[in-house]
Image 1: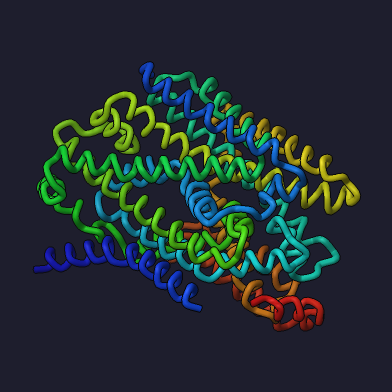
Image 2 (image 1 turned 180 degrees about the vertical axis):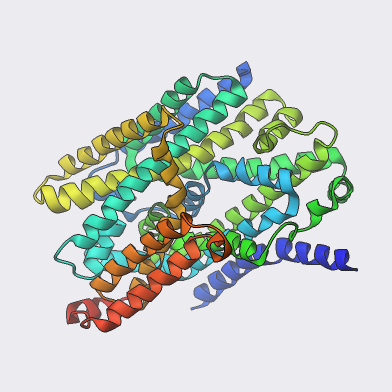
Length: 35
Length: 482
């Protein structure tokens, strides 16, 4: 159980924050274009 | 070195030199030479910022760390991505606009002097001296890394590799200045990007699938799949704190200052962040796939995992091009730092202090000869890789981040900031980094950039609030920035 949650946390930190900053950059681009 | 690999390398070096000659013919004044006359398009801005930032760490260090330790090395990649994002999002466009309004400042010391209307010149002199010392050593350390790599991997003589590498970098930087450096960075960044996409994809395919890679690595050691393995909270915070360094790196901030239109910054941000994140993933997956691929015959030196995979999986022609990506990663950082040093001499000392009435061509040639002199100093230092002077490079990323980072951010967003606050903040940030690095145990195990950054910001705020308000002209200029 504990090892499953550690692995889930590992994949979360690997796969969420980094792509998220790319998505936020795209959001910024479209927001600024709209303006 | 095989004939195809050597041919690919020579072709690549000729392309770089041609770019230098091309921009030599288009350089008319010092602004052209050290900031490209603020004429970069968003693609070149983005990739040159990324390539000059990442160095050999992206193709050697990070894959090597992943190969040796597994997922507990992701934290620095996460921290760097977030730091770079915040830098693009909040600093890039405003810095571009402000530097132009602040009497068309073309270097960071130039900006600081003009931002605070500092007639004493102390801000310019101190920041330029710090840049000169640390970037010369940074350049030297980059050259050492490149020469050792070529000595170990291809059996080249260390001194030969060092002087040939320096000659090529100096060649195109000397001739074409900022535009040559930025466009070569663009090509180098593109090469690094494709190398980091192709190599892990082939490696994973050779193992079977991504699931097979994960299963094989987990079977060898379950800790490979654990991002928290051997990590403390302080350790994770320290690795993520590397991202704070971005706000104070002069060679990266120079790219922001050089984009043609400030309104194109969001596009550059998208390109830059996509390049960076995919590149980091490529490096992470290269190292991780290496664990599975070399399971039966582990590598002696983990940092060669990218090279070993290229040599094992591709034909020598493709391999030559992919290995040129490593050379690119090293060169793109060294050339940018060399040019920042040159700008400190030509703009901050020669033009502003020594010869205010110097002619345009005289300034350009001052910049060019500074490149040669600095490269000679850096290469001579690198000729003895055991030199203690090179140990100073360990202070560079943290030192710039902690002493310039808060200064740049607060100068862009806080009207009440004063010159004295800036000066004290820079000194406090630098001293904290030096002090912290020389202590150990307990909280001193925290990466020095974090306390340095916090104390620098606190010092700026306290000293600024205790002193007199900035002059009306400084406040008016601040208010005119949109």
